[in-house]
Image (tube, rainbow, N blue to C red):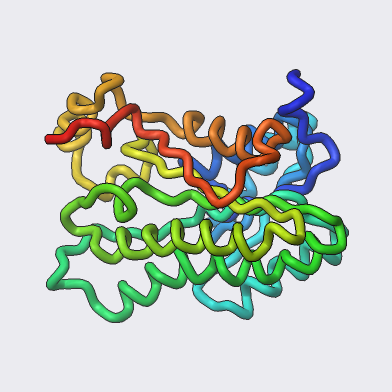
Length: 255
């Protein structure tokens, strides 16, 4: 194991870690020695993953959380602090994005999208900041998206707006928290083959998307997990306020 990618002794919190990209992130950190807490609305799936990884001598546990309420977010982090004493890496991966035509977006859809995708990132980081300050360092990572900051997709205006906000948060929080030695970065996935991709349509839709990716395939969850590992590692110790695009080149063509 590369010394730079050894997370032994580190505590990592991953929201939305039960499946898809989140699952790959949990596995990547756990298999490299980190103590990982999966915070997910889908508790049975999260518990099954925790049990599977614990069977491989990893330290993983699962806790239920609905990130819509700020008080719940603070309680999540406070509980982790009481039980584990520290938090080294915060990964906000949970996302909400029901495919909805613009004219049909309701207040409840918009509110939940912004709460889960964007507001929770504020509250998680605020809740973790006292621990980061005591420890003299911290790392915040967010799963953003190319949708919103760079490109658009029909039916995802609410999601695009939330992810554009995530990128703004990353840059500004990185500036404000740098004095505490807290780094804030993110990853912008393109089209990744996960269960969530089913929100965009059936196999014909995904096959069509894959055919237009310059590298010739959809991404896989481990592609995003690898980027997260890098940004959390000492290899990226001088990187903050940045987002890394992982999209197989999809945003490169001019037309």
